[in-house]
Image 1 (tube, rainbow, N blue to C red):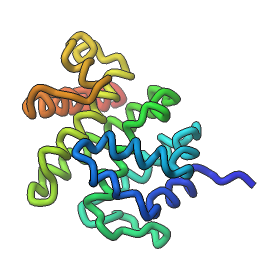
Image 2 (tube, rainbow, N blue to C red):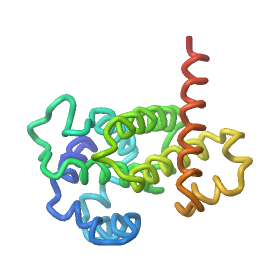
Image 3 (cartoon, helix red, strand yellow):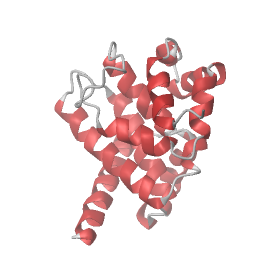
Image 4 (cartoon, rainbow, N blue to C red):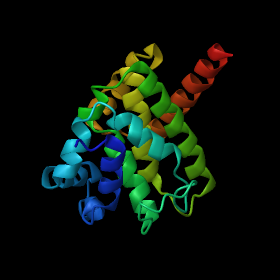
Length: 188
């Protein structure tokens, strides 16, 4: 019997080594190392519906844990698990399978979470802004938003994850907010 992606997400959230990404000075290196070592993550990232399931979980996150509780998910060390979810969301192996609708949903969820982070500055650092801006950058790049794709530094960030300044991260988030607001206006 095949395991569905939602069950894999739960398994990966409870993986005892999930937070080892923190042992690395570069969280992206740390998350890749964990993925290499845990076949559950490898399997999840190959699933067609992985992004949908991870985005659904991401939308349900709050600062203290899940907004709608799920007894199957261990919420200990929640701020680190929050970032863990975000690091999984930017993995190229799942983004390459994403539809435009998947990317719009991810972008909207990420913008919502940046607002959550702004309201809890004692819980979140500038590193969290960088992770958020990376999700936004990946989304805007994949959606081919001209204002983003025409900026060489932004595109470089979307592919390599390196920015020159924290202000650039905030500018990318603002561009994402603008796009979400515009796309919501177009739907109404």
